[in-house]
Length: 397
Image (cartoon, rainbow, N blue to C red; front, side, top):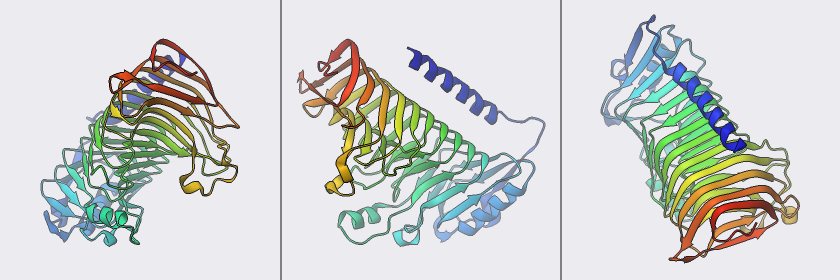
């Protein structure tokens, strides 16, 4: 109960901050910069990268409230970095489609296709689309050839007070959206789409950030719908549809010995359909001083999910780079509450924790998961905790 109350207080405090940030300032005029006025071409063929940068430069130097407007059309962009700090609040209104080059080598060696760096009070909104055109790179990777790593479609680095609302991200080369080293970010009403076999196309990746919310979104991809990396705190994920994909994952954690932990995470009202995992905590079987604590998974629906509830602290692909085969990540105070649906495998609940640092204070409350209209199974290793209410499969805690 204490964890639930704390999570709600954190959420409402965060939302209040974001709403205040988004309120219009009636005392100041809003200046609109239409990218067409800077020479952008909406034919999807001619390169508009330079014209978008000119529009950003004008907006960033303005002391007035600014909207950068991208009307309907298809705008070809190469790698583009929108750098701050800027002098005022900026809204980027996208009604058209931003298109990456079809040749994946044009942007695939960079970490991001569209990147915002060191910005404050920037919102990217509208019913537009980011089309990463990543299918050719996926084919290259799946064939085993030597291919570039691929670019994240939309990134925010070292930024504060960010809003992303209503966008669609289609066929990213790598991650669709990345929030890295940011404070106060709200992603709402996003639609993310990539093929179920597209490699490393995480929907939303969050790392080294605090006070991030992901709300009212639909994510269909080939990797994690949402991945939570090291150094995150005060995350709120609510009303998300996930599938296909690998579910919502905290991790992989523990690659580095000195690694910041993850704490105060709430995941609620999420439906997982045909995913590899539901909610997962995954750590490398390596020495690390990191941790995961104070996590609430609540009101989740599983539909034919291979691993609905899983903690895997023995992650070590091909048994390489894992001296000692023991995870140093300490996992504690994790609650699974009101979770029901169907598992695609016999083991619906799997807690495989560290031999050196067992998971502690794991709670199952009103969990009801079945397998092919039969009783599913639970597996526990190196874990301590409690169960209450109706818990199926029978708790192994």
